[in-house]
Amino acid sequence: ILPNEVTYNTLVSMFASQGEVAQAMEVMKHMKQDHVRPSLITFTSLLNACAEGKRPELADAVLKEMRGSGVEPDIACMNAVLKARAVCGHMRDARVLFDEIGKAKKDPVKKNAISYNTMIWLYSNRGKLDEALALVDAMIENGVNPDDITFSIIFNALNLEKKGWLALKLYRKYHSYVVASPSMVTYTALLRSVLFTRERNTGDIEGILKDMREAHLIRNDAMYNQLYMAFVAEDGTFRLGLKRIDDLRREDRRKRRRGSGPRDDVEENVDPQSLLRSMVPFGETKSDGPFGKAR
Image (cartoon, rainbow, N blue to C red; front, top):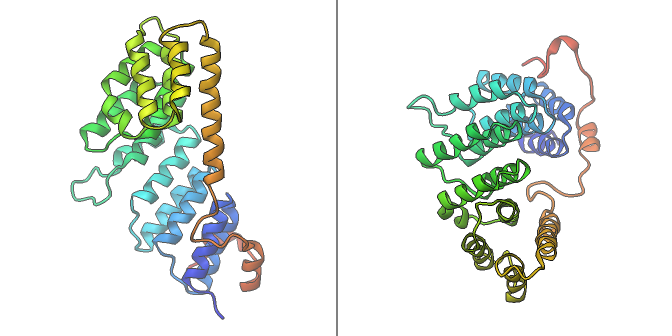
């Protein structure tokens, strides 16, 4: 049985999920050799592999090849290229690409929350909080709602920078967006920031705890009461309250790890190396470039 587009896409997807960029590119060469036209799915998987493998130059080459073959990139593809630049700290190149996405009025590809969050993460990671916050306002102005990832990035950065006063200001400013997509990472970072700032007041802390309880991030009334006594009533159990917050975050992290299983569209027990070897022999021609020669 000759391999078809589905077979190749499965292989590319599996290699991409494992961060095996070279092997994913090898599959691309074999697709061309077998006259199988790469699809949007193929290119998306390749670009994700480049992002995971921190290969921005290869992502650019894949994007060029994609457009040259007549396949128009969607926002998932553009976000993958953006991520490849961001994870390598290429701030200027990332911003250039970010600004190009959806720039033309007739361009069907528009920035989404992932696009903004990628740049917000990059700016926050480089200590450029003003630029990051400007993008939060920009995404709202452009009809893209900030989500739990947005605020997790922002509040974690502010917590590390010990800027609880700013975290508190942003919590008040963006409250409707924060409560619309609550997460444990967002609220624990926010709470820790606020607890150590002089500008806090018991009303703000109580409001944060109530948000967490209503979102079931604080799982029961007993835990809520314990945190309330520690941080609002200030009964002398402040350190214990901090420990409980850290416990909640660790528990949430464990739950999310347990909940992340194999991808639905890829069989769990398939060995991509052996499957590829059974289809075609390996072999590279140096002059072929990263994609091999089109035939």
